[in-house]
Image (cartoon, rainbow, N blue to C red):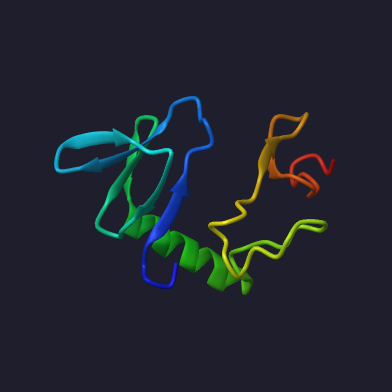
Length: 107
């Protein structure tokens, strides 16, 4: 987000996603997080600041916009929080975006 916040959605993950703040752990289903927050994915805790920096570095290196355009789906670049990208598990076991070829097996 331009204001430095991250919109995080837990899509019913098996281990859950939680906000860790002030010693309290609160489950996250859908939440705006600031760079000063920490997020727990299963047993791993990472700061939102590190997530945002990683996203920025990845997409600068690739020279692409971080919101993918999926054929047949509305353009998500204007309001990415309105239409989230749907992730599915490929038959090979890898996670991929719906409607996009799997990078692992090519299906």
